[in-house]
Image (cartoon, rainbow over all chains, first blue to last red; front, top):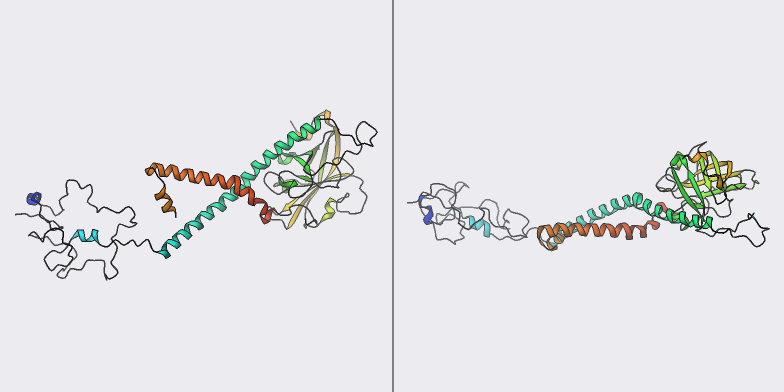
Amino acid sequence: MTTSVSPRGRHDARDDDATSVIPAIDGDQTSVIAAIDVDQTSVIPAIDVNQTSVIPQFADATSVLPAILDEPSAAPGTDSTDGADGKLYDSRAWRTRDRRRRSGGPVRTTARVLGEILITLGLVVLLFAVYEVYGKTAIINSHQNQLDQQLQSSWSGPTPTPTNSSGGKSAAPLAPLPGDAVARLYIPKLKKHWVVVEGVSLKDIRFAPGHYPGTALPGAIGNFAVAGHRVPAIFWDLNEVQKSDTIVVETKDNWYVYTVTVNEIVTPHSVEVIAPTPDEPGVKPSAAMLTLTTCNPKWDNYQRMVVHAKLVSTTPHSAGAPVALGS
Amino acid sequence: MYAWIWRTLPFGRWGKVLGAALLIAGLGLLFWYVIFPAIDPLLPFNDVQVTPGTTP
């Protein structure tokens, strides 16, 4: 006689001596937990729509715990869940219950895909923010290296002389073409330097500060005006360049050292800042000035930040870098 | 969508991990070197940066 309780209702020969309520495990079974279909997204058996409660209903049951039967029940394979024939609990019925996938359905799938797409887009935007700082800096630096070499080779090459020059150093050098490297600009306070190109269109200033066409050349009486993007690799920290800071410009012939006179915020249309006499349009220039312009605030462009500087010294190129540049 | 990608990647668990890593790296590089440089000039805060008064 068996004292075991086989909830499946089966009566194994092995059960004969068992004294526990835990169902005997089949030799090949690797787990007591019902095998889960790989696509199933929940372990909890799906509830039949018509079912009004999760707890299986047993007609004669007075509790949900399976009762311990003292006699073998019906033959294996019956899926009955009511208690009419004395079998109160058939775990196979749980497992084989209709496992309609509740995670399917068009509405739920659409919502899930939409959510995943939105999260992905958020990550892309974050990546873009990182690119704006680090990616563009790398691109600008590599272009600056190219421009450096371009400048070096154009300075060490022969000086193009205008046809009406009387020989020697050309008094009126040929106007550089847009995009050509013109000079080097150093700001020791920011520990940065750039090759300045000619022109201030978006294409020209994309990777380097640009020289406003028509304004003076470095060291000449007038206003050597330069525009640069407010990006980390170019004029990002221009707000730190204040009165009496040094700016150095290097051309093929000379080193020019300028001292900052003012750092101001103006409207985008203040063309007077690049006039030959800064802020005084129409007045004939009497000093050699330098003007740097960029956007303000840092990520917007409804203002401009303008730095004016006046020339303090000119030394020939062969004399080497000025003291202001340090070692 | 991601569940589908995971299921579709071949070569077992480690194959999926590797495949996912390759996908992420590939997409990341595509964005960084191709798509971002292309859309960067089109963005509003890069507009007409520093030319006071002159609107091209």
